[in-house]
Length: 449
Image 1: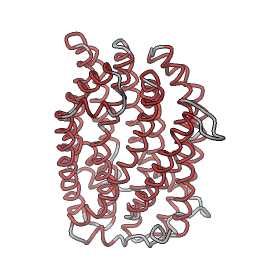
Image 2 (image 1 turned 90 degrees about the horizontal axis):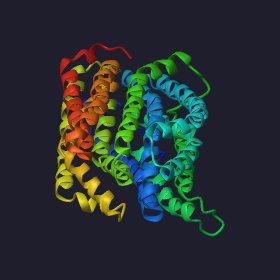
Image 3 (image 1 turned 90 degrees about the vertical axis):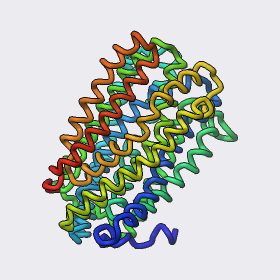
Image 4 (image 1 turned 60 degrees about the vertical axis):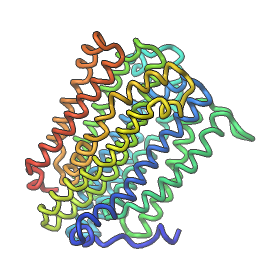
C-alpha cells in the first residue's frame, strides 16, 4: 500500500515539462488502466462463451449494449470531474478540486441508485425491442437485472478514477484496475459453475462477480483519495457538482445515444441468427484493443489540456491534443494489421462455434481501418472534453452514429450481414475526421470551466 499512498504528481509537471515526456508519463499508466478495463470485460465473454455456449455469449453481447448505457451515465460525472477539477489543480486551487471531487462523487452514487431502479423496469422492453431469440432473451434479462444491482458502485468507481486522473495521477487507477481484474478472473468461473460453498449462478454469476469486484475496488480507491486529501466530503458544493455534471452531460448523452443505436443495429443483426449476434459482441469487444488504448491516451490528454488551459497555456494544450492522437493512431495501426492477418484466431479465443468465427472474422476485416482513425476520434473528443467543450462534439458524433441504422438497413440488401459491419466502419471513420476538424477550429480554447 505504500506505493498507492504516494503523493500526487505536482501539476507543474503537466504544464512545464517537455510535452512528449509528459504525455507518455501520464498516458502509459492510463493506457494500462484502459486495457485492464477491456480485460475485465473480456473475462466475462471468455468464461461465458467457453462454459455456457453461443446463446449465452449472444445474451451477454446484447445485454452489453445496455451496460454501455449505464457506463455512459457514469462517465458523465467522470468527464466533469476531469474537466473541472483538473482546471482547479492547474490554477493551484487543490482544496477546491477536492470539494468538486467529493460533491460529484456523492451525486454519482445517488444517481446510480435512481438509474438502477429505472433500469429494472425497462429491461423487459429492451429485449422486446431487439427481437432477440427466446433463449437469448431469457439469459440476457437474467444477466442484466443482476448487473443493475451494482450501478451505484459502477458510477462511484468512475468518479473515483477521474479524481485521480484530474490530479495528474494515472498510476493509482492502474493499480486499482489490476486488482479488480485479478478478482474477476478468479470469481467469474467460480460463480458461474459453483465451487465449494459458492452457488452455481450460471450467467448471473458473471454479473455478480463484476458487482463484487467494482465495490471492493471503489472502497479501496476512496480510502486512498481521503489519505491524499484529493476528495472532501465535509463540504457539499452544489454549484461545483452541477458544473461537473453540465460538462459531462453531452458526453453521457452521446454515449447513451451510441448504445441505443447499437440496440437498433442488434435488431437488424438478429435476422442473421445467434452466430451473428455473438459475433457482433465479440467484434465489439475486440475493437476495444484500439478503443481502450485511445481512451488511455485521451484521458491523459484531457488532464493535460485542462491543466494547461487553467495555467494559461492554450498553445501547449493544442499541441498536446495533436501529439497524443498521433500516438494513439500509431498504436491502432498495429491492431488493424492483426484484424486483417489473424481474424479467425482472434475470434476463436472466445468460441468454438464455426458460424460465430466466420461472422466475427468478417467483422474484424471490415473494421480494420477504423482502428487507426479511432485515435483521432477518441483522443480529440476527450481533449475537447478536458477543455469543457462537449456540446458540439456530441452533435457531430451523434449525427454520424445515427446514420448507422439507415445505412445498415440499406446495405444489408446487397451485402447481407457484411452491410451492418461496413455501416459501422464508414461512420466511425467519419467521426474521427469530425473531431479533427473541431480540434483544429480552436473554439474550445475560449471555453470557461
